[in-house]
Length: 542
Image (cartoon, rainbow, N blue to C red; front, top):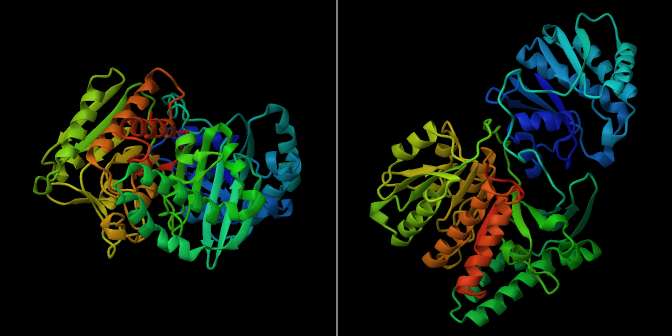
């Protein structure tokens, strides 16, 4: 068992970053969507059998919120490590010293407190006697003396063998090179958490470091409840492009005013204008996820989703699983599923799938497998069980079931392929593009049939994110065939630049696709705002 600590809101660093790389970015993905955030002393197991690590599991120990950290509680971390090892009957474990670095505890003191908790727990906890060896890893040889002194000061007559090893936590000898480029990388960005707490809204502003600011104000329940119907009536059903554009700006500005601008100086327009790296991530909950954030507008920034790389992070009610290790490769591998249900044929979806498949097939930087027309469940399952795709592109019908958990999914010729079905396949594509009606909808918005959705957190988006899909891109409302095809082709054209430049990410490709729709169909066509990206916008596909 390998042990790393996690500070709430902080991306993996040091030993955790080494593990994250070997696990294909599993830690950084969870850190980005908030699923690693937990109380001090809590533990989460991640299976590591599909990674290159010489360990069966990784234990993440919660270090809580940085502003509330107390060094005197570090023995609890040591006890948590022993308790976790005892629960599985593990004989040996490796850990770094927790509480140093950004939390500021001197290394010798942190080692002493950590080991005090470890050794006391070994003597007190039932089953802890199975733990016979504990390796304390210190990557800096110059600091290993302090670690040794701290461990020595805490030693007692325990039967466990504690030893110090210099060097980072590394993959097993002879293993292939670790994670895809950028898998564990988290650049400078702006993160806004917009959530609801009973009658209050909570806006939290943070970046790539541990500093956060927050503001509470009355949640605009009436505005939020009326917004889906207003979006349908004033935008999606409006026939005049100029009037439609004006209403898009108006609704987007109201959304900013009601849920960000009301936080005073904390939520000023300059906050969005100055987003570092042009990257903005919105962390949303059940109450806020189905609002049309891609229309967010201020006079200073214009439409945020067109000026910045905007993505969403969804708060999940359950913990996700680890994504499988993916060896580095140079060609983007794509599975295209188009117009699969002959009983509900979609000529536009077939044309889109054929256009995407041809575009990818003509490029040396891509490998494509196309299943177009009359595609059954076994055909898709066979491909996902046999091949590890970087991206799955689906264009067809999406179906939502508000009564049964995990039954929302994508229509095939013989049945619905649900999120549960997809997550159970041997390989799950790391990026999922569902160009289907309302595929990214997660709530009960049902305005005039244009915004139909499903029970929050029990649909395609949340289930696939929990299964550790790196990014999900889908439509929030019904998008016409021509702009849908424009968006898809432009998205893949941008991603194919990944073979020639390391700067193209999923977020940049989405931003490029929005611009292509505006250029081809006009700014007043709502299709450019109809797509929501879930995940980290800086992530590459490969």
